[in-house]
Length: 175
Image (cartoon, rainbow, N blue to C red):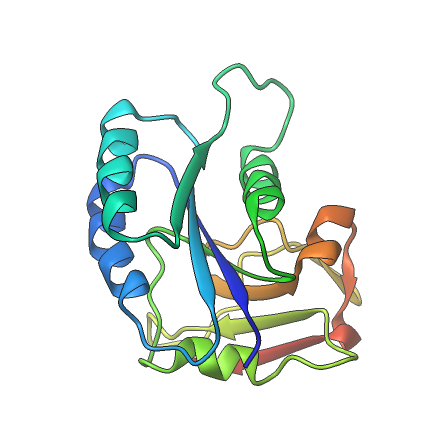
């Protein structure tokens, strides 16, 4: 198993985060993992709650986006801040409102990692039809900075380069 850093981005989603974090922090995974919450709005109540949670969970940390950003995509900034805070090469990017299909979702995602893979996309079924992830897909490339409807596992170095990734270097699995 590989070690992963889970980056959870949130924006005014405190109730969803309060449901998600205990599940994430208590999940069974053979490798090591850490969880970093990135608050896009810098909510003081959320920050206090996260500081309390960090006392019980040493592999939990949090940060926030500055309030004075102009002309910067807040999603890209949040993921970049989370990636820079990460201790492991592989990153799981998800939003606070995201769910997954099974209890072994992290093991299933990490099982797809290999030498030729830079990004693994875990699609969840929320409605009757499957939908493409809410990422920007341009011909044969994918941008990984908008993880709003799927869970992404990517290399830290790939995310920090900020470039689109060839679809041939991606795997898409159902969770």
